[in-house]
Amino acid sequence: MKSLLGMAALLAIAPCTHAASDFVKGDATFAGEAELGATVTTGNTETTSVKGRLAMKQELGKWENQYLIEGLYKEDTDEVTAKRYLGSIQGNYRFDGRSYMFATGGYEVDPFTGYDYKFNTAAGYGYRLYQGNSSFLDGEIGPGYQYQRLDSEQQQELGYTSEASWVAHGVLNYELEISETSKFKQMFVADYGDKLDARSETSVTANIIGALAMKFAVIVRYNSDPLDDKKSTDTETNMTLLYSF
Image (cartoon, rainbow, N blue to C red; front, side):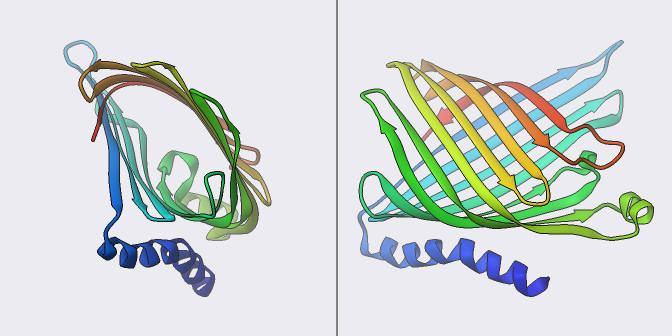
């Protein structure tokens, strides 16, 4: 198991390592988005909700690296009701303006699913399926591997410590510029092996002033075979401020 995880991590990191050498030669561009939303109430109702996200993109010649850090925390009357942390990295090697190879890896912590953490990695082929004047659609497909570590309660109940499987990994990513100051995005990610793990994110951003924008997003997570006392579908609705750099 450790050797498989090690190979998967190297697979995800390899493109970025090669790209680092290109960075020294120059011709690099770097951009990103940081977003934050928070709600705090006191008095008869005491709640705290914080959502943060940092996405960065680095272009180095034919190489493109993407980094993502995301966190969600909710507390209601001193009881934690949601806690999720996610980190991922992806390296793309572009053959031309439409086709590329990719390698990706991600690590997620969400104790409310019955798992301590989830690790997944994949590699394959990506292609721009559609390119319009103000929109595009990208697709990615390839083999991957997923490892999930059960929490102590689930380990005791089920009698084993983890779940792992090879998966078919697929991504559809659509973006549309509604106007000069607003944008629509739809991303769908699926990993199918012993079960189906899928994630859909629909968002609309509207510029406020300069690099500052307001973002509204709906995220749906689906697990076709959840643990006995868990639901198969989780939804998340956010309103955040977004800063582009």
